[in-house]
Length: 306
Image (cartoon, rainbow, N blue to C red; front, side, top):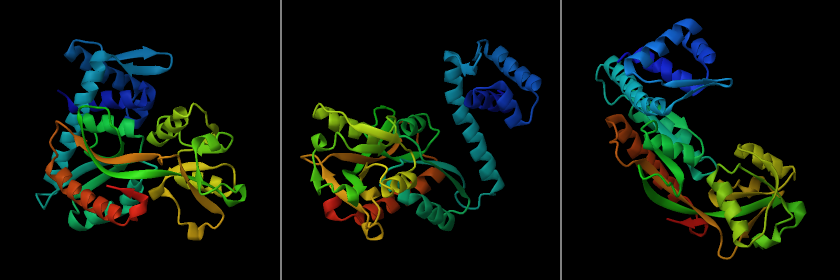
């Protein structure tokens, strides 16, 4: 099987366009189309379907795409190991870290520790929704992740490591008390992530349990932007306690607990349930677990439990 044709196929699927894929691969559209046609001919099935919006994989194409990701990754790892001439553990490792979680604090320490302990390893950190990251872990495109549970895929091994309490963060001028119920904040403008995110799902669930509905003022994926918006009193937000800013530096913000009992989310360490870790991934896993344990140890006992 021609690796270049597989790479061309996966690029077309990723970009959903022959023209965009050809530009990315520095090929003419004609040359790329010939490679794709040749791949389909060798497989004996149609791999891509065309529409006015672009291209998308057929059922057979989705199967090939999943395997192609693993094949191309193995090729990259082989090249990396050969070029490193066997000087220690080497290769590429992909780590998923859920946004709006304590995992966000681990990116820079992880990069620094891997550089110091395994300089021939290239770490790819992906911050995305837990659902997408869990699918990537299941298919071997991401080696491990610190995500919000539950992760519904059987192909993913889920190890709960911490329970984080959700809190309401608002501007002091609103005068919100130190504890509120979901029924108390139905008229409060909320700035939250989209429904693809585990935090949003937990927030919606909290309101639904009381048969009330939140007032969503905006949906924001960036935590720094969200905190700035709350600081300007454009609305309030709901975040895990470990993601809250240091209020000493934000005297205009106040934190309130929500619900009786308090609403919480579970953080989990996730790996593939069937695909073994490569030597370089195992080395990064040890570092990530060490950093995660140290991060959890710094959390005050009142902020959650492991």
